[in-house]
Amino acid sequence: MSARIDVVSIFPDYLAPLELSLVGKARQRGIVDIAVHDLRDWTTDRHRTVDDTPFGGGAGMVMRPDVWGDALDEVLQAGPDGGAAPGGRVLLVPTPAGQPFTQRTAEELAGVLADGGQVAIACGRYEGIDSRITEHYAARHDVQVREVSIGDYVLNGGEVAALVVIEAVVRLLPGVLGNAASVIEESHGTDGLLEHPSYTQPPTWRDLEVPEILRSGDHGRIARWRRERAVERTAQVRPDLLATHPVTVRAARRGDAEVLAELAAATFRLACPPDMSEEDMAAYVQEHLTLERFRGYLKDGRRWLLVAEVVGAVVGYTMSIMGEPTDPEIAAAVPTRPTAELSKFYVRAALHRSGAASALMEATLAMARERGLPGIWLGVNGQNERARRFYGKHGFERVGGRTFTVGSRRESDDVMYRTL
Image (cartoon, rainbow, N blue to C red; front, side):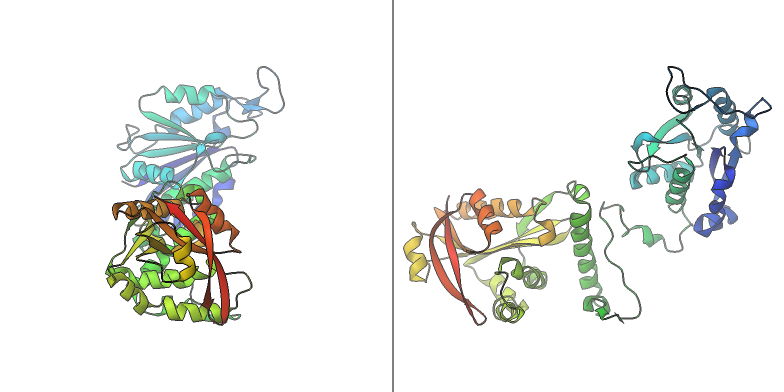
């Protein structure tokens, strides 16, 4: 039994694109049966009237319930035997006043169709359909009424929305897409993220290169890169979607060395003064943030590293080091012993407002308390006002300063301390 969709409209020709592309092929192959009906076929006057003036006054016209009722009574009985639809019947009414139409909605409707159900779409016009239509059919035990909106704007009618709904739903039916895996990683998929960037031939176009990792053949690294980019893109474009995913913090493992080195190289510049050269930043990364360095850090019993993850992607890390400060300036400024340095604290820029940084900080401070430390210190560049405010918010206070070398430059840090 093929899935069945009925569309009722006063402009049936508007739905002609349903003969095209994957939806059209699905119809030809019998995967889905889509019938488009002209509402005026159910009118009884010579003018084929479908609307009238609204009770209570006001601009515009309202579509009549008697015409719509006759049409929907017949359409909702459509089928080989005119009997019950195994998967149920849904009357879908596109309206700016409806609930948002989302990928989850599309999945639910696809489930109705896949089970042998029916979706009937009522395309309103003018000021909409008389509200008694939704009231009446909602009271029927065999019909589920859903009013949906495809966005916070107003269209002239429901036909465009019907095309959107059908396109989104039909592509989810078994056998419609050539590769069923296509729906797994796309935007608004099961993980609720936007899709990662995509590239094809040629590898160089107008001086823009395809990322090297996508040409590496290393499927594990490619999968990780794609997940990281999906999380970043979602954070930048739709932070509301990312807000539904909790930030998790865990102890770093030895197998994390590669991802930590990549993350460190990508985020180190966030802590650098704006006038620092690319050469000096690269020199620091090569000296302190390589894969071999992180392998060593993860084996060092004096250090503890934590990573923050969102939907399985590592988005930030901290590294703390137990021990007496060797710099005399720092030793004089830090008030208590034993102590530890919060040596590295980085979160991808796109995730700065996601809660990842605060979760990392709380977990780092909790680990310091578990180790019995009375306090922990860190150094932050004096020009990095954003970081200084963040640390201040989490209880760090300036207790002194220090100087150090990055590449060919001497830099100065504020030394900040947090009593535990």
